[in-house]
Image (cartoon, rainbow, N blue to C red; front, side, top):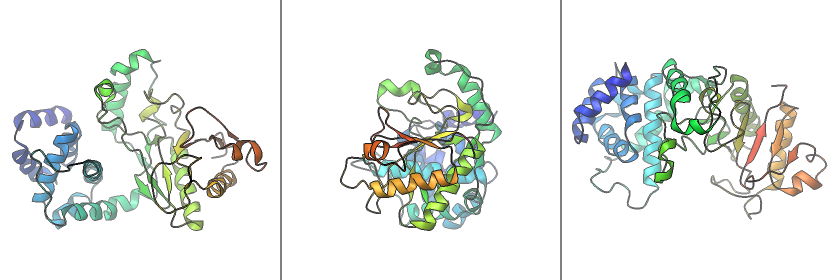
Length: 325
């Protein structure tokens, strides 16, 4: 029902981004979920355009009030991710998109990071809402890209989301197919696009690993990537991420920066990566790793029995929980 209402709102305000932004600020408190759904339906450019206008209208107090709820928190995170992504591109805020008023983006980031809901969410995996579960049950039956893959029954055990940030970790690849581009990938788009979904045990284990790591290396957060999609449905960019029990992460760096790297780059730290592997194995003894650093998977006796090479794993570890979680 709310999805139809979101489409109706977009139709009503088509070509009127300022009027749409004003309307969404008026319904934000009582209908935060609907506001989120409207923004989720917008394309990348329009989401930034309307998002900037939306934030320029809201006062800091109103923003905090909005993000005190779960739906408001997800909306704030969606806007933050969209703005950060767009600001990284050349000529940001061009083509008619207004500039953010002074301090508005900083207000958004602070509010997202300090909302009462997020503080609770960071301590535990988030159970997907019934709206999200219903959407993906239907998506798994009808999506065009699924037609070439084996259709799967939605597994409700794989319905727990890793929070976008937490003690000792960040997520580096959120919603990587939500606004797929170029044109050949348009069929891969979906409404929510979350790839950090697993079983409750898996997501809890990832949070536990990061906390353990943080206690030893507080300035070197782990960089987590994809787990699975909702319910274990087929993923077009993975063939081994469908049981909610495996996840990707970047190898460790010598510096304290974030970003991609490969095992043969000068910023790669074999020592820290090995330490992470041993910490994970100490917590969960059945864990296995796919990674192409042959110093770990061939010559080092402490790791070679459970670190194996695999095609495409120069720039990330694929970590598989086998048992004992």
